[in-house]
Image 1 (cartoon, rainbow, N blue to C red):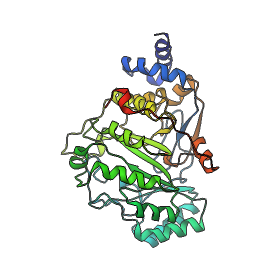
Image 2 (cartoon, one colour):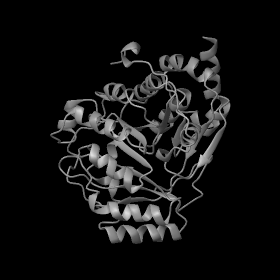
Image 3 (tube, rainbow, N blue to C red):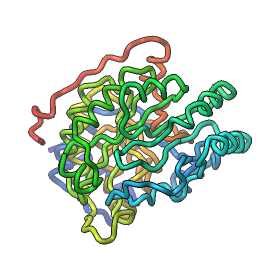
Image 4 (cartoon, rainbow, N blue to C red):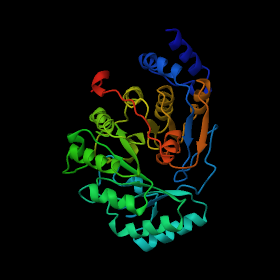
Length: 360
């Protein structure tokens, strides 16, 4: 109880948290983890979203833009997104346009880009016509980083992305068939997501799967199954994001996930993927929910966070966690583990089964 009391005292001492109602039973579970985790934490401010708090603001305006090869179009029209996430991205809807976009953003100071696009009806982003241009980009600008949202792929497609020079492959992992069918309107199986992850893991690309917490209309359903799938592969990092009801289909009843439920999942993920980099991505509900979620992420020992909310840096410092700020997308994951892997050393991974923590 002494550790918990110390944690409560730290939270009470941060002005940004004055009006927040932290979940006391969760704080008790987090107290041991937060007292033991003094590893540095990284904060990311990618430029595809304007960002400012009293503690931190984006300083590199054009270093890491997001580009969509379909513009704002997506055939799936999933209930949790309705393609809204694509609308603010830079469109590059044919190969020549992509090359011009990259040349323009490099001239404007970009060091890399998030490359994505809307899916077809099989949850595939049709990159094939763009692969020669991606190859050309990497040949002409070898230091330019490309983090690419793959969607579902087979072994051949994974190898083609690798050959083109993609640096980081990202993929949402869904662990519940009902979510695939009802939220994504997709005639694919849970196994298809694992097979895509397996195919990507056999390449030299950095593999950074994502889990969308609360994807099933704001409720957690297949998240622990997704975590179990990811634990079977040597991924470079895991990015966790939280569903944002403001982007969902207004005719569907999405709720904002409870911050304490999200915080418990952070703790479970940290226990399962003990030595894997776990990052909190850009997408999460705004306001008080974001502040609580961010605080739980820091206390749970996550390694990095994009666009930290007010109070997050103060909390990390109070817990003895030093920090650095990067202007890149968190999926590029400029971490010690990746630098070790680049030097040719394998990263050992210690894992615990989800079944052992009783949260399935």
